[in-house]
Structure formats: structure tokens, C-alpha cells
Length: 354
Image (cartoon, rainbow, N blue to C red):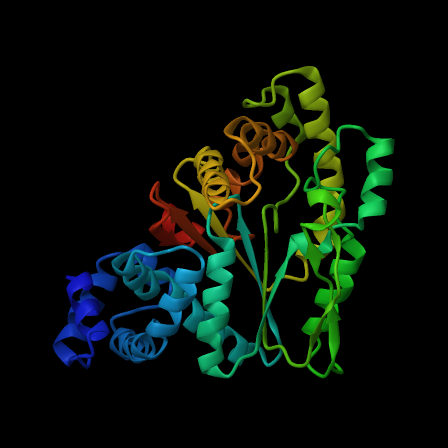
């Protein structure tokens, strides 16, 4: 039903009251999602009307953006825009309005969960609320190439950038703290990281000049992740198998504690989580295969396997991310990603547990 209604709108038909009432009934039939997006029987029709008006305006722009990301399925784009991207954007705009200062949304998600696509589309939609939005990644806080080379000399286990300890945490705290200020001076210079430099090892590039910001989307593969009980390392999931693996995992865990002041800058945390975290490996392999097919450099399936498992050893999803799905004190919204990379369910941890 939703697909047929959205297809009519895409074809140029105007939303009808009957269609909007059907869409509201569809939303209310999923109580956990309705609660997550603040939709009730009282305010629901007004919210659906707002979303339908916005859908018609932004859909052509979203399709163009999705095409640039290699997403060709128009029906999938329609439904994801309606069910996920628009309600999140509307909710962010409401939070910004209530806060009376820039709002920082943390987005936690592993490889292939759609962080880059989500932040780009949210930024596009939020322009229609006249809220300039900054997309900022944990990757942008990597230490310089020379600093990471020195780290590698001190600790040969740091074969790839990414684990706790490879970022300039103080820089991140300073940047987010400046962005939070309601009366800050512009312009601000935002650090950026170019992964292509030094043969793919990456380095800082020219900072981005920012002249106005109302919303900050701060994403990364362990943004918001908290330290856990040391007892968890007594029996670890694969690929943490050998004593050396376990030692590396414990050392990364200790480094993670340095990031807590950075996470304190977040106003909200959203988790993008696959129905099976191991799908990240498959998705990364598909992405690399696509790059190779296009004549670009890319990793082999075996190289991807080692690469992804390296990250799982440093901060394993089962140990560090899965518990957050049930932690309403830390996480405000969970988006469960299905095997085809579409959103399967959306909920607040408290809603899921109730």
C-alpha cells in the first residue's frame, strides 16, 4: 500500500486525505517505530501531512543523490525516504528548534551500514528547514600520517588506522565544543582527512571553512561506544582467538576510555545495526568488487576479511555495540538494517524492551 501511494506522488499526483490517513494507520500499526518518531493518534495526522509535503519537494533531489551513491532502486529509495530519512530529519529539526543552539547527533554504525548515505541525505533534507548542517566523521580526527607512523613504530599491531588511539581526541573535543556554542564566531575551520594520500594510508587535508551550522551529524564506526566490564574478555567471540588477539582487544579497550569526553559532546546517539553484524564483511567485499570492476584499486575478498576482522578484534560488535541496543541511557534511536541494506525496524531501546 505504501509503495503504491508513494508511486502516485512521484508521478505528480497530490497527496489526498484518504492516503494520508492510510499512511498514519500504517505508522501507528508499528508502536515501537511510532514512539521513536513521536507519532501519536493526537499529532499523527499533522505529522504525516508535514512528511507528505516534504516528500514531494525533496524526492527528485534524493533520487539524484542516491544515483551518485550507486543506489538505483527507485521503489527502495521511495520507501526508505518515507519511513526513515524524512522522519529522522523532521525529528532533528524539532530538536534543534527546542535546543536554541546547534544540535550534535552522533551516528554509530559499522562498515556498510549506510552512514555516509544517511548523513548526506539528512543534510539535503535539512536545507529545506533552513538549517545548515555539517557532516563530520570520526575519520576526520585521525592523527596525521607522521604521527601514526610514529605510533606504528611504538606498537607494530597498529597496521591500519581506525582503532582507539589513532585519533586526535583533543582536536575532536575542541571542534565539537566550538560548534555547540550558541554565539560562536565564524568562520570555523573543520579538519578533514584524505584517505588517498600516502598510498592509501591517508593524511590531513585542507580544513573546510564553515560559515554557519545549526546541526552536526557526527558519524563513525565506534562513535559513542562505551567501555565494558573487563570480565567480558575472559570469554571472547571470534576472531578474538589467540592470547595476542585478546591482549590487543584489551589494550584498545583501555584506549577507548580516552574518548568518553568526546562522546559527552553529543546531544543524541543513533545506532545503525545490521540484523547480523557479520554482514559488514560481505558488504565491504561487494563494495571493493564494484570498485575493481570500475577499474579502480580495491581490496581482494581475502584482504577485506583480514581488514574487517582487525576492527572486530579491536572493538568487537558483540561486546561493545550489541549491549547499546538495549541501553536507553546512552542510545536514543536504533535502526536495524536488513540483509538487503534496507531498514528493518526502528525503535528506542526503552520501546523495544517494553
